[in-house]
Length: 359
Image (cartoon, rainbow, N blue to C red; front, side, top):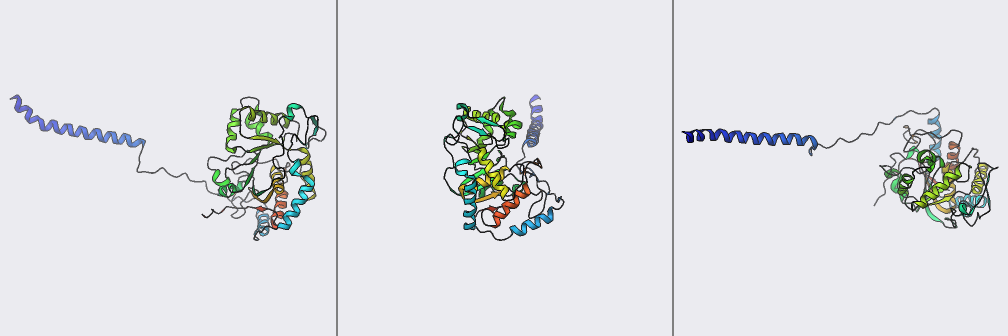
């Protein structure tokens, strides 16, 4: 009797086991699918739509600029050599742009270019931070890219073109990672650092300094150019930057602007019609490049808040929209002078996107 009962229940038990197994499999699949679904791709992150808030008077000004810029550019060797000769004779960047142990010995009194009444006597300790020799002394590169930080570089695709230059100069420790490299490149031979960045971002290097050195890794073994002797308050933080890089074994080297050179450069550009409280870092670097580069290309130099071709709104920098102090630099006038040099074939301004290079 018992055997017959088991025989009659066996099909029912088998059915229950099969249903349980199927239910377990279905439950596992449902929970596992909540974590990873290989069949549905993640949605693409959409870029914010472009804005077209045209600043007052900008459209007419941009049209005039683009009329001058639209002519086919060709280098005019005679114009380039004439301008370079004039710049070299009045400023002598080859020998004077950088403070060295040769041109600024121990005991020499440095006169600050931003504070003419302030001087500093060179001590052995300060002397030890100076370059032993001028890094650019009578050396000429074929192509140089001077990269400003203007919002015009956003989505420009100019990274590969910039990196193809023999010598690349960048301004004020700009970000080069997290997608920016496609548009601004990563190659760096010389980068400037405004002391205000060292103060605001790194606490004047008075506390922990490792983050500062780690952030410099993106610039490789390039030179960092600091205006240590423009104003008195710049000197301590710039010297701390030099000591920090040495203490942490950074492959970068610090060099200091020679205030005598900056004085001469200011006079030179005033004679060209530029009246400003201070020259921008961009035009300083363009001036330096014009002395030691045969072909100078400028990127990220655009003073307007609208794109030159499509007139959509641009951020002030390609990485943020922080504005500069309006009375510090005469950016539109600087740009006009650079555009004039572009028209004369002395240097080349790049406005707009870069076409991908053909293999």
